[in-house]
Image 1 (tube, rainbow, N blue to C red):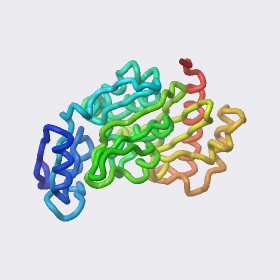
Image 2: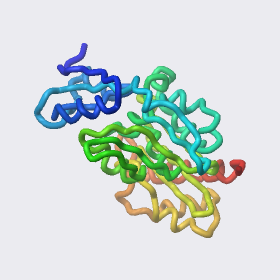
Image 3: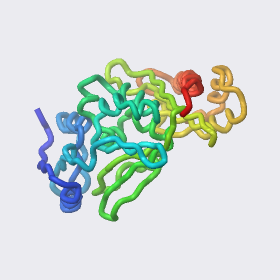
Length: 280
């Protein structure tokens, strides 16, 4: 039973979708629907404004689908690409293995066959797996909205989310073969108790965490403490112990201290995997 009443539209083009989103104050984008439809069933779905509750279905828009190489050897991944497609794509596994691993870690096969890249990145209030991998890979999120088209860093998008009336159209990822993803999942929901993604490159080390933190976030303090030193488990755990006490958010029966230790262990594993990744 769906407890929330709403109107539904399935536009044929992105231009039409943006017009619909702009015409109704209470409009939301529907892609895979793995989070939104669950909230509609429970009555927990939140619509912006006080206008019509409109769902704008963008999952069949060709402009939002597909994976292709960019001129610089990176990737452009359409927002309506499913998690299953992302996980299986050979180009993603080679150029951005953390993204492929994060997609594989999401839910179960049914979720991955319906859930989308854009929806996973934009899922408000849920610790999904893809944002942390996008952070580590230095991805950018492409948006189309009332002000035109723009590109924002994945870190900025994780903080602010999609602007009202906008649609995530794609993400772009620079070549990032030395990336890795590790996760400890909640057994009931498959959401991450803690998930980390790392990148080891000539521009330095990137470490991102979700689940154990209030939102997907880069741990720049950890990055700084590990710069120029060893990346063995003991050194990584020592770097995590120096994080601010309120960095990790307790919940679901686990303490902040435990989550900080778990994040360090997963980061050490991910760094070992990234360091062993073939280059080129």
